[in-house]
Image (cartoon, rainbow, N blue to C red; front, side):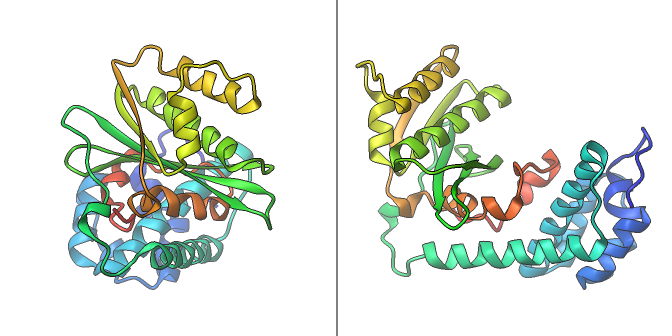
Length: 270
């Protein structure tokens, strides 16, 4: 069980506490993961990145994420998991995510269908909604990148209940602009693959429908933005957000990582 003393830091959560050591042993990763802590979290991540292959590093990042979720659930909700449950959750998530990547990857896809970065000074935030009829809800995926294609941050969430696709996509677009507000990004491109939702957001005519109320929220959230553009793209250029939306229900809560991990999310497809 993770302890809750006030001085708990990254080294304690991910490296030297017995729960973390047991988790790493069960993850079946090379011993480099727990043999050395060079001084800080980012230094440790860089060291581990150099010592693991692509698949191993993917597993490493997701195990860290699941340990972070375990820590938050314990501290905030008094819910505990075992090291084996943490590792199994990581493996399950990776399997789901890799299946999604395979489904959304099309060999021979022309270059003009690839995701394009924003102009310098802008943040591009891609969003997508994935309907799960079995679970009776909508998965939300949002990912932010800059002009150098760097992933700055991302979010997943779930909403119970299913409505019209444009309504669900409008909710997801609202999540994207809320995300931008929280991160204090004031010059953004908000990009999605639902044309109806993008058209409604761009429209100047008042919409009295339930979707219109969500669109109104979006405009309120962006009142203080310096620049905001709404862009429609094809699904093939929106793969990262789509994959996150599809696995949102696997996470069972909003997906957030400690900020130092964001630059290492190489398994999110462009």
